[in-house]
Length: 436
Image 1: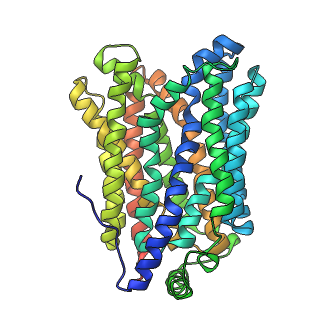
Image 2: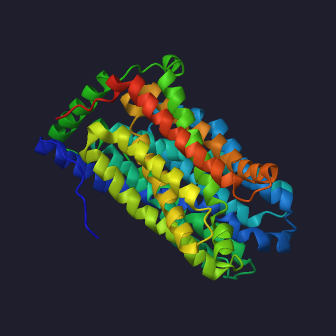
Image 3: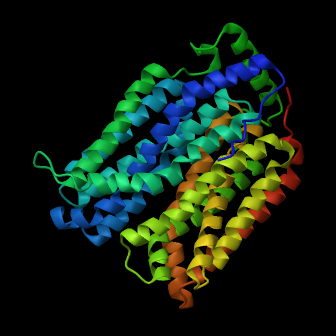
């Protein structure tokens, strides 16, 4: 695979500092988010056996799957404000231990109520984790390389869906010490998260100024660059952040992106099975992994290209949504090959746009306002994730057409494109990149 180098600055000391931070922070955050995402979606593997073993009802399962996003939305902003107050080391470490512990506790549920409570707690404890990673990236990395950093985290999604799924499938067949395989799945995957969280408490540093792995000269150069970028933001006030129309627009854009993402994600296996005329089994799961594998390449390349062409980031983000919209539209074609290619285009567009998107809040806000702004965007994203599956199903039923929901998701993608371009037009002066 042809590699694209990260964007770099003309100052060699700054580049050395960024390389050190990348090697120090990115691998740990990547692995943590990988297991966080697996613990978010692995209940899909456990549904049937939990229903057989503990009598989990269809209603309780569906409500438990959805209530995760309710808690995620409620606690997104408070969690990020606490991270900004207490520091990355403590907050990311503690939240990882907590969501890992909740995931482990799910192995021992005995009834519907316990399952629903633990899913809510998982959403609550995980609410500050992904926004915290984004805030940590903004604290350490200048804008020119931030897209590549966040893209590395986003790669966890296709990996969790294509590689993590077989891992969960293998664990669920493990029966040891009187525990069923579904219990071991939660114990192993949640336990790894908790152990990594405990390690993060020791390993992370709160900011470049306190980073033990940087020299004083590297700290000074990096802090100077970060301070230059903060000076062109609109505000560091939390109150003014929520009065900023740009942040509301960004939050709405992210919410619509998540509606389309989860509207696709939750139904992809069954859609693929219908295309190839089989049940949702092993064969369908292999083919359903193709769009996520393709999206991994997109997430790697597209944000790096955007980092090299910083003046065209908004245009690239808009093109990603256009690709996603057309992909969703043409995925309704009955020809399996065309439909799979179209679904792959959708996955590439939806996931590749997100690293580029997450650069924008830090170009408008700084300090506590940035923490609140990121949390607010993820809160609206959580709302979008919650309504996504219900929206697609209800529109199919309302229109008496199995593809009406997909057409609606396609329209949402094109509407996102419009909002991105309007935001760029209205706030063009806010997105100028400061060069070294």
